[in-house]
Length: 329
Image (tube, rainbow, N blue to C red):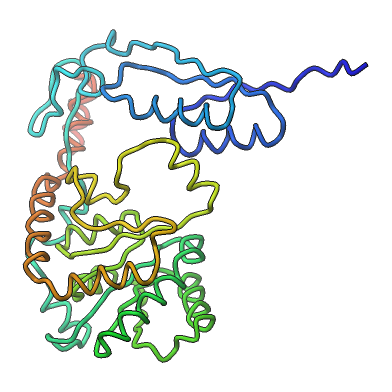
């Protein structure tokens, strides 16, 4: 007679990828999983809906949502639909201050294409594409060969094109060079750079970029781009079941619509991405419209972030501590 009790685990399920992976590992190791999520009064249901989808997909025994009313601690734009996120000053209750993004303060609002091309020794009329396959080694392992084959597809149709590939570390450069050998693509006009990602993007006519912070940098530099990403099949299946926004790229998320195309997983083919970049190169009017969209985003994010954030922190301190801060300044 088998009297072994079932193995049980409680999983705190936020709706994000980390907790979903934890649940998947526990299920793969034979645990009966009981999932717990927190409803703290957030203004959207995206996280909770994603948690429910993941719990159902991975066959959790039970999924409960605990109510945690954070609004009892004071009004906050995070939990109170009647409070807008303030752009200029603090709201009542829990202090909320919009501080923008430091990249928007650092990068120029105006186009720097000519200066960047002069710095990199590029002719003004030469077709130039920037390829940014990711900053992490794992990203290059998934993306490098696809980006190289995209460059090959563009080169076949636009032989005079040059491809700039800024790489942040020796390790990522080695991975990309290895991918070039595997693809037998050393004859392609690919110029690798140590760093200089901003210069490469500014100098380019269009950018192919792995989803991440670099997409925001490309947007702040007003460059048309195709966003691409590949990941492990298991991770992708989890992400799809979460039911998040229809777009993954930061520029599209900030705009609340598809401004630039995204090619995720099986859609991230050299043919698809080459065509998107060539379309940008041929259609200057669309590029101008995209640049205007990105300019609006830039101005929204350009808020003197460091000073605003520091002021918000100081203003939240007790008055005696605040006096000490100003006295020592």
